[in-house]
Image 1 (tube, one colour):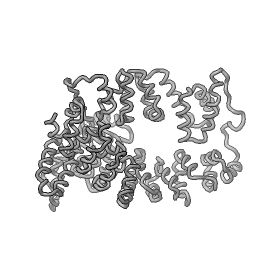
Image 2 (cartoon, helix red, strand yellow):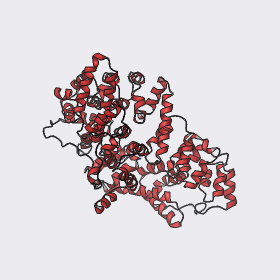
Image 3 (cartoon, rainbow, N blue to C red):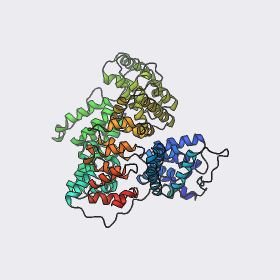
Image 4 (tube, rainbow, N blue to C red):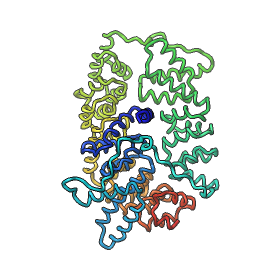
Length: 594
């Protein structure tokens, strides 16, 4: 058993191993209040599908509503599991609406609740019963209930518990689509597996249409790159700017078995060059290697190297421009050499560095002294009146923990919003310092960025950011809430589902806009907490006709009114109807229509 557990741990990444040990330690017992809080934070912020699957397969954790709701809202939770959990969320939301409905509507609402309960996953029905009992009546003095799911034993098959759910096998009776129908399907399908098949298809036009699907994601592109054997597909992905600059996509292109050798070499040279620039040129041999890599770099990769330099080391932009300006002459066979002066890699004298730290006015000089190895020079540079928050923020990611803490304790810079936000995302900043800086961040955007950052490991910082976001949203009027929702692209719905989705007045006024972003409509149509009146309003929105994905989500949402569902069902093609009929989450009333 120990060998199996060791092999399982070896299959996890280092951050996953840390979280897994916490989960495995408390799994055989009833969680305390603090452990429930910790599990809620993990369910909301983890990005590991395997660990999220483990949490979703632990029934006595799901019996705590915050954990279940966080798992249902986490986009990293496997699709099949998330759909099942969303149905539980929808069940309780419909029960709440049934209690508030007029007496004439209670019977219909009750039938809808019963029908939805019958469609729940059998493993989740005991959990739903227990949650309903806890909500309906107070817990007895003993705190015991017979419906509590049994605690797991000591012998646990972790591989089976963390195995991702298998996708349903495709049915052989699926209709054969003509090419025109396939092109339309590739552009509008909301099924990830079907979209993946279009991406790896041999038809070039079909691939190009699939790449324009609004539901295309980085994860889907990476999966397609690993499966595709068509060389042209790699060049098509590489040619799109939204994938060209993404590190994970570039790595997937380079590592894919079907990647053309020329493209793989092109990307490998750029990655080696960036890694060499990150290490620096402390020795002449390092300088010669950087020069050699620059001379071999393809012209098309200069955009990526320039983009990297702007984000990580702005002082290297002059070096990139130097080699780019000499690119044509290098192709004609002329050799290049480094300048004879000023590029020997040695630091100036202490007097010159102190003078620069206090008197420099040029951006490249100030950034250089901020990276000086001497702490005294760094402290003096922080007092330079020519130092701006933008310069300091661009340098912060490259600083070590000690210097980041020093900036965070500086009387002036800790109050600067840009510097404070950059510091909070610093990988080595302590939790105490991050919490202190959090109070200096104004507006919604910094809090959303903190919740979105997967590298930020401090759960208390994320909890405080969530509370800040909730307070700011609740203090807004309706017009300000609409502006915030549109500016965040609906991201607020993910972090504040209860506050946003129960604010029916704001949602109705926002959906009444005929130019609303389809992505927001898609989030609303999919969420099981969206009020029925808003779902009915979305069903008549003019954007609906151009996005089959929104229609599919409305039909899969059990809260969508029957009349609206029947009307939308008639707008779908036969192929789209057949695709939806394969989903186990399609309401029974629509299944009878199909």
